Length: 371
Ligand SMILES: Cc1cc2nc3c(=O)[nH]c(=O)nc-3n(C[C@H](O)[C@H](O)[C@H](O)COP(=O)(O)OP(=O)(O)OC[C@H]3O[C@@H](n4cnc5c(N)ncnc54)[C@H](O)[C@@H]3O)c2cc1C
Image 1 (spheres, rainbow, N blue to C red):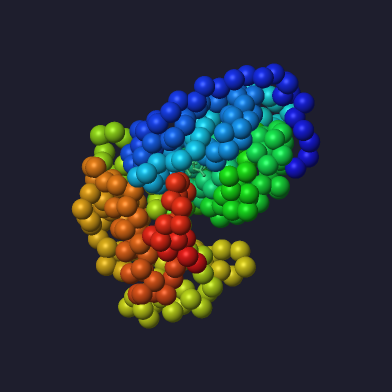
Image 2: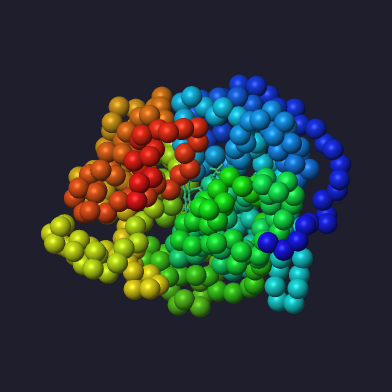
């Protein structure tokens, strides 16, 4: 963390929190009780004002982005929920590099579309991921061979612990596979207000098997960024991974579990447990990343499995969906059943990807978070 941001003026904006606001409509899962208090922050100053308000009222504060990675308790959140709605994108040029400085409340896919439209590489495989720009550093979103950390230059955030605005370079964000300091050690401490991306023109990334397959009959050099974006969107739609009100399989948090990364020996033993070779992708340090979807299907969960009002997507076993009227409890119970069966069959503890909100000392959540 380097400096106090001098662009923040000492003004005293006020916020007017609303009482008892249902949170389900703010989430892609469509589940969750009310926020005791709810406010939107459209500027960094309003974030600071929300922080002051919550501190004066002695209430916890939760930061809401696009609600695409949240399981919110049926009882809701007993504190102040602040939806970050800071908008705007500033584009600057430095030699061959183009900098996008983007408000945390901008929709993520708009940033990808703008980068691809300008011929800038590095984000094209992250097309179609729902949520806000501010949500992307939190779990270092990734897909189809790219991670957002590779293109992030800086993150500007309001530090709730120190009550000031700070700017962190990418190296200070603790990025790793599907996590960061914002999700791990410093969860809940920073309200991300701006994210700067450093982009350059270049060829698209075509490394992930599904994407490679789309262009197998083409010379790689002829494939454009826009074509890769369209290919990724098409692949994602087939898997129910692009939000679509007409597709019930998209009423989810995306992947419910992170792909486990295990030692090579553990991967080798999977073949014996499953009666055939197990898929795996090499990771740094000799470890192997195993598709969680493969483990779930081999543990006996078919696509489209239903447990009351919750189920698995008919297109992707890794997505737990709200089939209509599901509660957070329905989702937790199904997730716990999946985790238990995978552990029994393969000895691997799946780690959930979404953030759980409003579940104080909940045994199902505690089990899901167990390593
Ligand atoms: C259909 C579908 C497909 C998906 N596909 C992918 C995928 O391919 N790859 C992938 O990595 N993820 C994927 N996701 C998960 C999700 O879209 C991403 O994690 C997204 O970045 C979450 O952003 P959000 O704004 O919706 O955050 P929220 O869901 O609102 O919040 C998630 C977490 O981030 C925090 N947060 C949000 N905004 C801020 C902020 N401004 N400051 C500080 N903290 C903040 C919240 O407090 C919470 O802890 C998918 C989800 C769905 C529903």
